[in-house]
Image (cartoon, rainbow, N blue to C red; front, side, top):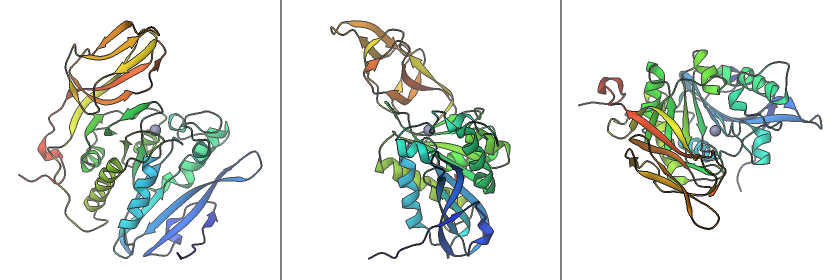
Length: 335
Ligand SMILES: [Zn+2]
């Protein structure tokens, strides 16, 4: 029988108050629901025996994006707090009401990752975001924010990061993903708030929503362990990662202009050519109404897999303008 662990409810995360060399499990009270019962966020804190930075890993800020939860659970099993330098603060379910409803949004149908850092007085989502930032995220020195594709779409394993910033570029390459997209920090995202407050942060997009995809989870875990080695939180050599990622200067969605039934052809992470047919939209009688072609050479970051297609549906997420990164700018690389 496994040992019963008492989980303590707390008002705020105070890492220094926790005993070194141990794993702690806490629930942090953010706001209250309509029964007056607290919304509490579960945290696992691996408090290292030795000094070092505090790395936060957040998952399911969109409540149906679940691959990050399994990634965190697997990470816990890999880390010995007696050998860790610094602290790992793991947040498997950031958007607790969204998770319970199996939906992307908070309970008031607002996207938490567009309203950060929230407000001390405002809508339910605003209050929750504010408390999440001030009681938890503010305590991090680095942050990896784990996401997936939205419902009805599928993703490769890819990173969104500001590649102009040395620290976030390093974090991006350490993950060794299929694709890296250089993205400025979109206003209102957790990543934007954290980077503005000297907490280097990247977004890791792990496959699809509503599922555990273990091959992508294991690749993500590898990247996180690599990050821990780079930050000298665990021992070991940082993996060389120069050859593996496709780095895009930007990306955009290609949309349908007709409605009907859509079939999208390329595979994830496939490279495609300008003019290549990427999808066809049929009417309900099986006749082709629209042929959608790529307007550029690029790589498939994500795509729509839901056949019912309103005119104006996102069809394919294309990464374009590949960059050959300077080897000097990539950690762990040795000629
Ligand atoms: Zn997300």
